[in-house]
Each structure stands twice: as structure tokens, then as C-alpha cells.
Image 1 (cartoon, rainbow, N blue to C red):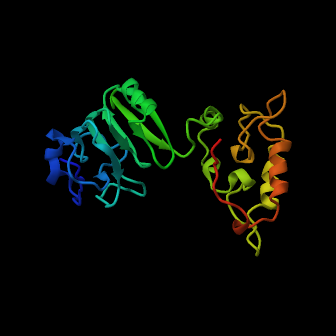
Image 2 (image 1 turned 120 degrees about the horizontal axis):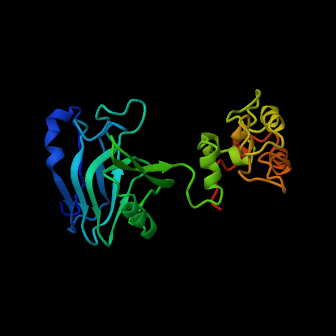
Image 3 (image 1 turned 45 degrees about the vertical axis):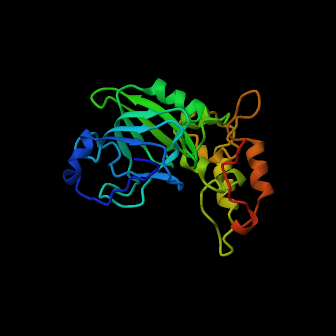
Length: 255
């Protein structure tokens, strides 16, 4: 394929069973619009009867190819669909943007994919990216979009706390601990948020009762490394009774 896009409107994997023996190559051509690849596979669905592709190669200097999920191919199940490809190759001058969609590759190729992440060939234009290997019987490497970028200094804390969704909520870093507005005026930061912070006061990261949503600034504080303390309270106070219109809604913010 020369600078073209791959689309798939099918909803029956058996109708496209030939994908499992198809090696698709993106090459340089006259097509100037961004190249896209329509994903259709079910998350964790495996390489059998799941719109899996045998091979995908991005040729040298082809530019960026972006994964998209524009059509429901019958595998969403309340989530986005993904791409299963057994053999992936991204040559110099090419980039693959997972676009917040999951990617599965045959075998343990974590080192290779990590290398492509490091040099920018494999990236996520919408958030972060995480690569990990899942051993037999799956035996595949997963490229997983994450809302909390791995470049953040508190990324490991986010993982330790179980990847709490609230850390990625648009108003959390401004004191919205409960992820909801409150009162007739729809205040984003108010007593419910204060209550969550108060009930988790001076708890440590290894405390099983810690609600990570109370950790507003995503950082420990003091010699004892308390996860919830005066810095978190200060953010709640600073944004007390503010509405969505008063706040930028851009959490988590770049460091």
C-alpha cells in the first residue's frame, strides 16, 4: 500500500479469515493525507478468529500511520477495539501512533517495542504508553495506552496504587477528589472532596485503606512520605466552590 489507509467495515471475522496470512506493507506514495489503520479485534481476544493480521510493516520514510476505531466491527463490548498483528516492523522514518488503542504482537518483543518507543517510532498521540509481555498460553506483547504518561515522576506511584482512574480525571489535580459536582450550583470542589481528603489524612502509600483519589497532588509529603497532607488540602481550599467554568479541566498536567 502506497501512502493509503486500511479500512474494515466487516463484522464477521470468518469473512476475513485471510487476514491471518496477510502481510500488509505501507510504502511511500503520492497520498498526502495521514495514513490510518482501522482496528477491529476484541481486546484480549487472541489471534484466532479475531481479525488478526499476520504482518504489518511501515516502510522507510512512510511517515505516520495512525490506528483508528471508526467502525464497530462487533468486538467493542463497551470498549474500543484493538489490533492483533503477529509480526510488526517499523522502519526508520516511519511512526505508528496507537491513538489510545491497544496493540498486541506475537511473542516476547518487549525490548524491540520499547526501543521504538524510546526513539519515537511507536507512540500515543493522546496520552502515555506502556509495553509489557504476557507469557504462555497467551505469549504476546501488549502496547497499552495509559492516561497517566510514563514520563511523569509520579508514574510509578500511579502503578503502585493500582492505576487509579481519578488521577486522570480532568479536575482531580484541582481538588475534585470525588469526580463529581456538588450542590445546586454544581461546585466542582466542595465538602465531599474535603471529606475524602480528611478521611485519608496522613496515610501512606502502602496503607490498604488509602483512597488514592484523596492524593490530589499525586506526591508524598514530609519525611514520613504521607500521601495526603497539607499540600492536598491547600489545593482543595484554593479551589473551594469553583465550578467547571472556573477551572481549566486539563488534569493531569504536564510536569
